[in-house]
Amino acid sequence: MTRTRQGLPKNAAKVEFIIHAETVKSMLNAGFNLRNIHTKMVEMHNISMSYYTLCYYVRKIHEKQQGKGLAEQQPFTTAKSTTERQAAHINPQRQPGIIKTGSDPFPDPRNIDPKTLI
Image (cartoon, rainbow, N blue to C red; front, side, top):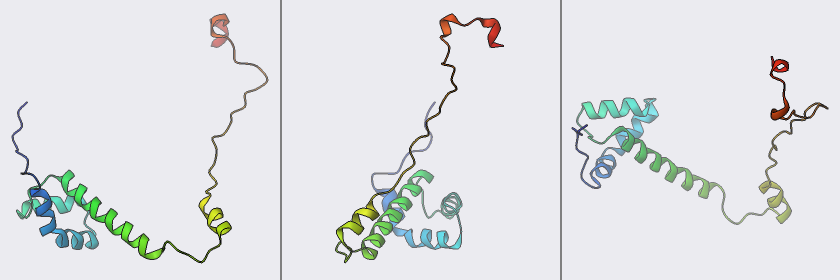
């Protein structure tokens, strides 16, 4: 199997994304999904990167914005007491349930009569 499409030169996809980042953001805000955005931009000859590369750069931008927003919302120094911070930090998680079998122990497969199984 031969590959018909050549990839972009190193960092060319990143340059394309930086050029059209505002267009991608506005289309996302308008309600387009990434598959439609990629299709439209390839049809308009704005980008030539793959769909997966576009997803990668959109995710990187999103993670960068999310991290920045959290840092602004919750400064490192707060007026909470130590016990409040410790209590907020502990997340009670459900433990896996223990399945209790009946009073009969699990039969040994070497000693089972096949007629009793059905």
